[in-house]
Structure formats: structure tokens, C-alpha cells
Image (tube, rainbow, N blue to C red; front, side, top):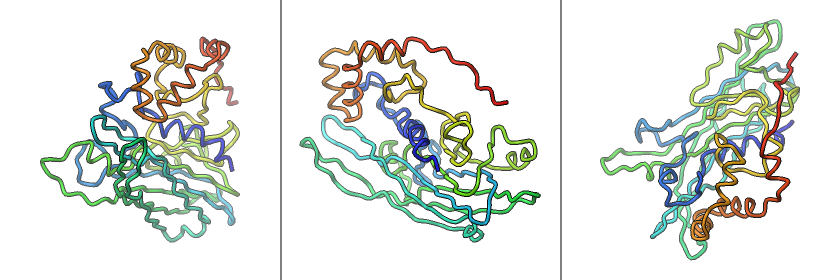
Length: 306
């Protein structure tokens, strides 16, 4: 299975929009965060969803096994004069034989509460319970085709009040939620470009608040990434990119050059804001000239799928 190949793309999804240039907590655009894949407590308001449902199809055998990974960020809050919410990566694995899903399976999970001490500050985490519901059904077809559905829910209890603020909701949310499915002894069907015989099957799959695509090499059909960001099949990180800038809608070269222009005071605030921002700044400052030149322009040709 090619989960390792999919992980780089999944990590880019995980941190998409995590922190935007100029990478400072004081910047206005970094005061409204977690743009993608937020599953908030049910009843906490209409601004965010409370569940995501993935449905995809695969050609199966009697020995087919599916490894399901639900990934998200848990927020860890620093109070005081310089408040900030840092993201902690959480991943929950549910490997299961496909035949066992003739009966639906429900798995409960939890983002744990706690307080961490770092750099002279207390960082607080809130308990967030969640649910993964998995089921599969056989499609009437001459081939052994099955659909698999994975539903992820935030199961936090929430009593709405007039004092609710978005930050309180987010600290009890699953942020940047996405699901990876890897199959052994089977192969997934593309929902974007299915073979002609499977077009009706693909069209019947229903996805809510998420978008599943094939990942890995162009010939691979053993891993699906279902994310809140719309992608094509087989997305890949550009080989010219030296690292994540947390904003795939920006041009790497321009964003890198602008980061280089930050003043010493701005850079100090960047380093104090978030460890990932400090790592990004270190990488940009140490970027060799040949790496920057590779960002200047690349000629690509459309994939020949036929």
C-alpha cells in the first residue's frame, strides 16, 4: 500500500491555511483561522459542519482489507498577552477486512484534554470526543464491486449560549479533518474519471463536506485521500518546492521572497508565534540560490492518460 506516498499530500492538506504570510499572530488574516475541514460540536452554529461523509467504490476480492486513517489537528491554546492556538497532529487507524463490514462498525475516539508547559507558558487542550462509522455494501454488477462509507463526527456536547465565540467552538473541534483509505487485494475506482462500466456506480456515491481522490503514482489505485479541499486524482507535491508555506494558492517564489523581506522585529514575532512558523523562517533564510532559482519557472505538460 502507498500510504507513505499519500502522506506528503495529506500533510499539505492538514496544514493548508494553518498560518498565512506574514506568519505573525498579530496579522489580521491570522486571527480568523482553520478555514478547511473543521468539524465543530453539533449545535454550535451553522458556520462549521459537525460531520463529514466519504463514499467511494472499489473492486474487491474475498481477502480485501481496508486500512482507514482519520487525521486532524487538535488545538492547544496559549493564553496571556499573546494568545495563540497551535495545532497538534492526531491520527486514528481502523484496519478492517472488507468482509467484516457486512455489519456496520462504529469506532469511538478522543482528543485528550490536558495542560502542557512550554516556553514559560501554559498550553491548554480540551477533550473532543469523536466517532468513525464505517459500512460497506455490494453493488449489483458482474464484477465484485463494493462501496465503502466512512462518516466522521464530532460528538462533543454543546449547549448554545449568547456568549459563544468562534474561538471557544474551534478549541472543541476537529480541525483540518481528512480521511485516508488504503486497500490490500483490491483497487479503488476513480470518482472523477471512472471506467465506462463504472460511471453509474461512481455517480451514485455521495460525499458530504469532503472530496475523495486517488493518490500515489498515476498507475496506483490502492489509496484514496478524502479531504475538504477539491483536488484532482493523483495530486503530488511539486518537486521544486523546498517545504510547506501553508498556502497552496500562493506562488512559492513570491511568498518566499516576501518572507525574506520581513524585518528583524517581524521575524522575532514569527518565531514567537508558532514552532512551525519558526521552522519555515529558518528554511527560507537558509535557502540556497539554486533552490530559489528552481522556483522561478517550470514548464509542465498535461498528463497523457491514454
